[in-house]
Length: 116
Image (cartoon, rainbow, N blue to C red; front, top):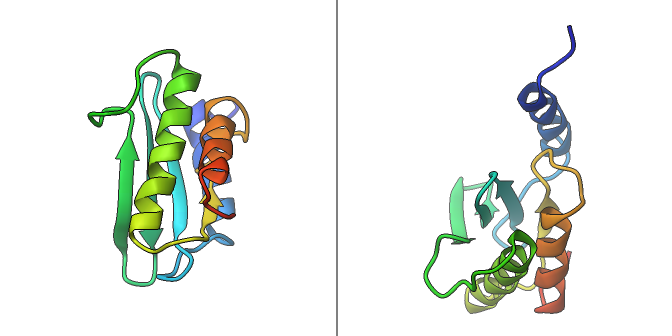
């Protein structure tokens, strides 16, 4: 019997997290995607703190298709990062394929000025 979808994602996630870490100067942009919502947060792994977080459940995030919402979240996390004085980060796709909503969020964050 093969791995379940969740177990497979957890293995990929561990493989990524061995390499990708966040610091105060260059935090980790972690993306979590559920069936309905999408969440992004900037994390300093050295101190174990979240520097900024945005989700599709927040007020002010445009509604529409899931991809449109992911774009809005990407722009919002870039704005939150600039308020914190963060210009660069390392992208953590959290075991998801760099495709669809995850890719849309990342590209929107890049367009809004976040470098990774």
